[in-house]
Length: 159
Image (cartoon, rainbow, N blue to C red; front, side, top):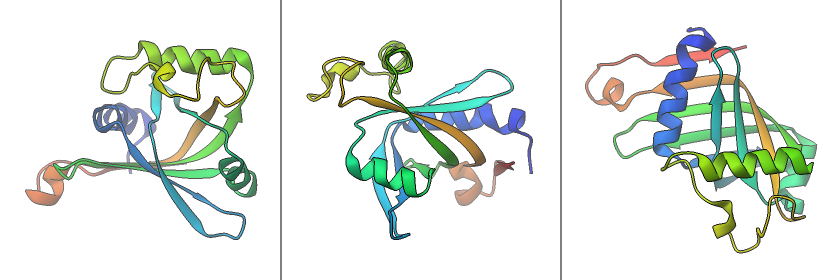
């Protein structure tokens, strides 16, 4: 198993290159529920934190209230995959929502985009916009070359 400082840069590089992740939560009856989301990750050399700009729908809120964990799985056609198992925390305050909005708006493509393109989001302080903070407790980076050619390292970290 690798340290967070060994795996986080590889994870962020792959996740930001792939962009979209299948995200699974658990509903109020303990059943898995999946959707596609677009996280952005911040690595400062010691802490990895993710953010999702999203609508705080009653369904998402109920799922994360029942279990505050989310699994994010990225996959590309080259068979590169990476996974982040995280604790998710809602942020509804104007300061955090504006910070996340601007982070996505100013990030380089392909991970960056202008959140205003979403029809229901007219501003970061709108009631139908929120941020989810992601605190990973487990990461896995699996290059497609490890699967297809037996080359490359599979990286794993957990608390």
